[in-house]
Length: 383
Image 1 (cartoon, rainbow, N blue to C red):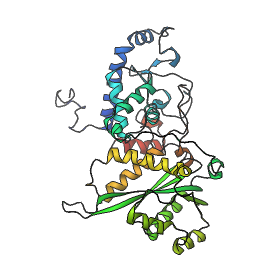
Image 2: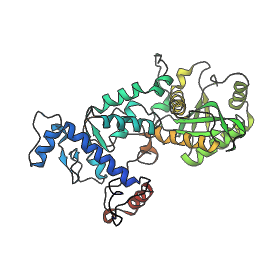
Image 3: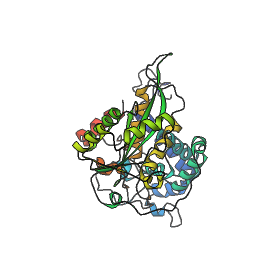
Image 4: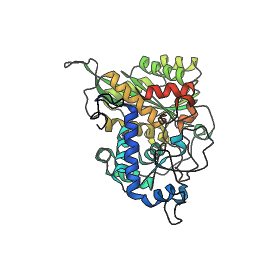
């Protein structure tokens, strides 16, 4: 706004649409305001070349001021190849309004992600004081999450199967479950054709990675097609485990039982030709399939909070499904640490592509220092 009110020859005039660089500068400005309201004494000490007081809550973070007067985490990762914003996150106060709004924004951006996953996404660029407590409060106070959050019933856990405790390649030993039906519109018109689709959820038993496929019906051909897509994109499958379709009722239950029954010759021939062994858990025993039941639960967790109406097309539904897959494969597998020198946490994405699917923006590195990959990524993010 300030640039637009200046003279016509001002080179910094901007259009009515905000660019990624403008949003980046605006976010830094708001973070600077938040820091001045809480950490003024620490900022004044650093500007004078002194260390922060020993009684300061920031002492353990080894803070410093960057070229934009932003208070950042110090640490021991300065010589690593990580982006600057990931090595030295922006410190945020715990009780400022901007910190709360940032948590709420990322919670909704990543499809109402859980508290631990939210902290992981925040710490890719920021280091909020008491971040875990803020994330738990945001998740607990979210109206959409509260409406969809059921009561958790504790069960006595049994022994894990061999596929769960044996190291293997991603999706070599997998579990499968179906969710649905979901009503979607096949034509983007006012009087479109509405139909049912289902989601096939494949879960790696070793790494907890998930693979989601949209299927239009419960026929053998549709399931084999989904299995072929999984096989082509994730690699060879040795063992496939499933339940006995207890989550389907009526005609859908009969169709799915016919699909997964051991007398299905078409499916049996395909599985034998691909050397895939299909194992069934005992009937009416969902506790034996806790891995894919948890995958189905997490899929519904995101879907029901983001899909606010049934008037979406098949392309929009598939986009949401793939987004959920990327978010779930970027969730931490272990509890997060408060150590500032531990940047990355292990996720299923590390076993698939070597890193989480959701990665931070790269806007702070000058062009002459960017590799070709970093330059391309920067161009894409500034569109």
